[in-house]
Image 1: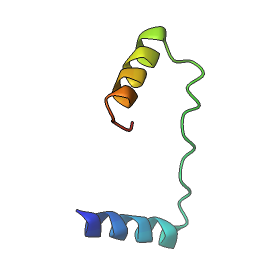
Image 2: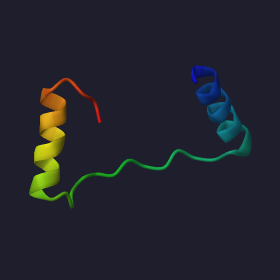
Image 3: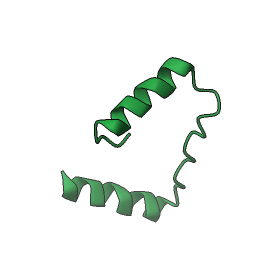
Length: 46
């Protein structure tokens, strides 16, 4: 799977595809914020 990821990244560079910007999260609901906080506190990375 790691090799597949490297091949995808190399192909994106070859084609000149930019990485899309991350969602700023400004429009997140309170429930989504709570879920992401719980994931972080459990040691997860979203």
